[in-house]
Image 1 (cartoon, rainbow, N blue to C red):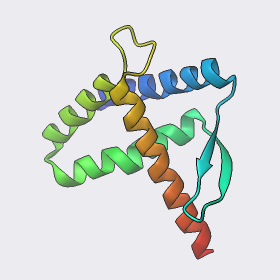
Image 2 (cartoon, helix red, strand yellow):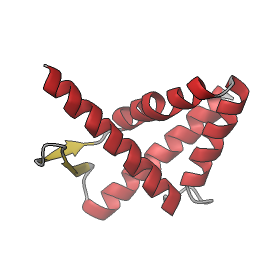
Image 3 (spheres, one colour):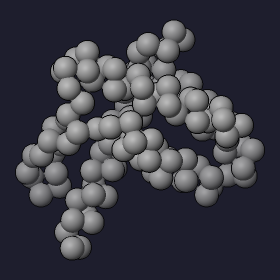
Amino acid sequence: MNLQIERCRQRLVRVKLQDMKATTNTHNILIDLPDGSITTVELTEEILEKALIKLFEAMVYDTNKREKAEIHIIQTYQRCVSKKFDTLTNTGNEFISAVIENLTEQAFQQRGKE
């Protein structure tokens, strides 16, 4: 099942990056930081994949048995991408936005500790 999770994760990341490129012609996004400032962040395949693994998949594995966790992860990723694998669904947009927001908050907190 790990291969299926990996495929679904890569598909979600690819579709998100393609959507960004089509919409803004870049992989950069504006982020509102907790201190009220705004910054630009370039999203890459590696950053998004690591964020999904660390912020979503790890949490699911921590709260469920392995088999149930894997099914939940796969189903979540599948709900995020259209049947033709070319666009994000509304669920997918909300999901990936939440992951990016969490990633930003963690990065901001880390920066504050340094």
